[in-house]
Image 1 (cartoon, rainbow, N blue to C red):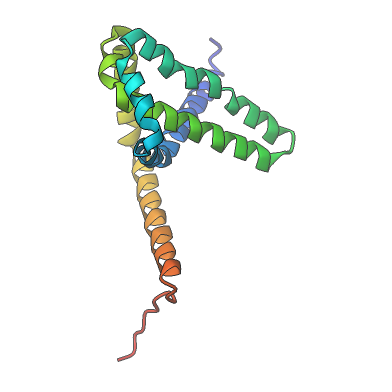
Image 2: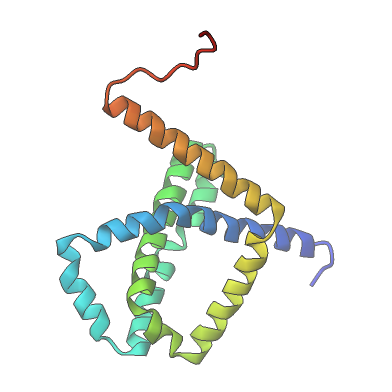
Length: 171
């Protein structure tokens, strides 16, 4: 491989994994909420009844189907359709992550019984552990929590129709 391409490929890989990890913060609670819906109980039973390799095929399906949303989104942004591109990217990624998160939560034991899957997952966790240990990642998590708490507080204030609290330094 050309030496000048290595840094570019490294940056692209990091961006790819960071975007997935950031969107997972949204996808996990959404997947948990969906799993509580009655309509998915029968589907969960069917997934649980599958053997390991059909479960792997089912797990791979949303990845294969929705992964092309990223290059499509990049094309849309590159051709000047920024809002459309970002919308396609966000919708495709969230949908993919929500489905994959639910499937993994339901069938983790079966998937881990497949040696190649267990190895790939172990490699993924090592990469994520290194990434999550960086100062940049820690700062991003703090900013994310601050933003979440701020939005939640604002939503609660809107819901209760109270004016935002003002800090007064007068006695």
